[in-house]
Length: 447
Image (cartoon, rainbow, N blue to C red; front, side):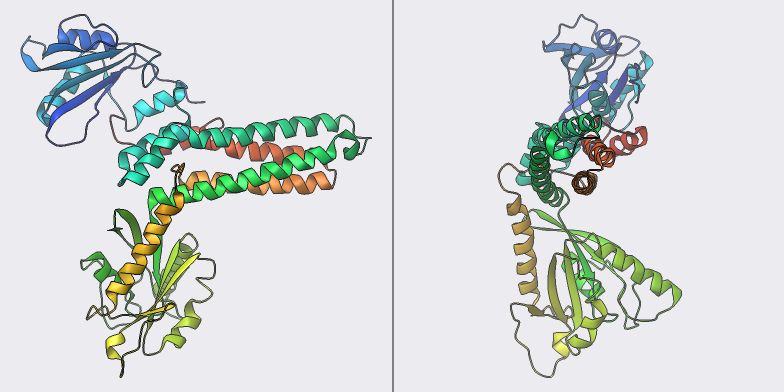
């Protein structure tokens, strides 16, 4: 378990750049004393004090507001002070430097939220929702992050975890009566509870996957045979020359990511190496990475040469078998002898002339919008690690049901424990220090 540092930390809590107001945040045992020295007056908890912040020589750095929040009724659970000054970068940095001179240290990224988690003010999923709320790009994502921060996701995880724990206690109690068949010890009711818990876990996994897509946007992989015009299509959709385009097959070797916005919803496009048999060692590595990217794709944008679409389908059909959404795009339609109408299943476009791109954009918009709308009211944001943990819990729960049917109670209890631990990793009830370091290092400084 990570120990809580008792250092007093300081950081700018507002975004970089100039603004009307900027905030420096302090947290820790010396926070109040440091702020009172800066303000040259006593600070009363939860009272806004108008003050002049002064340097070591008594000169005014700036005037503003000092707010003191006494532990444990604060964001971090420690003594916290917010110094509100004018939003000058120079002024804010001088305030932080003065705090450091008076005994604070500069905060690491995410350290305030990490302390809130370690002090029990937030669980881990809620702490991550803080970062998601800050990064939310539209109203839907902001509201979903707010629901996660309010504990909607955590409550559902905890409810399933509590049920798993109760079932596990029942199973372990039955181990003491090994001579008795499980059905005489309430086995039928136990199996029913396991079934209901499995359904609840399935529903939560689906909701978390929707929340992950709402947070991250649709993950679309552009895939197809070499020289079908995948990179040209990426450039057109991105509105810039992001990918190198040549007539040489196999030009694209590595993955190229580009984020575009469609009606306020993010869509991540990934250009990949053309799929075919053969190729040199570098091209084969590019194709391996392309197939790996498809394994976590929400959408496959399959680009084929309109002059020979069937020849390209064979190269990609296996690779996209598990991708839930697909758009078939026949590119280079301007090179056909006669125009071919776009159908519901296939779009005919030309990345060179722009023909058919409006229809492609409309279809992408529909999918992106549908993804956001599918989250619906009550949706919460989730992350890939949450989805993975829920999937692992589901696997262990399924194994527990198998072991229970076989009356292998020791193995069933162990599978239930593993499922419970997987859920605990979501909220931080079970965690490793390196996991915390990875999560909070992605936060902005001051949060």
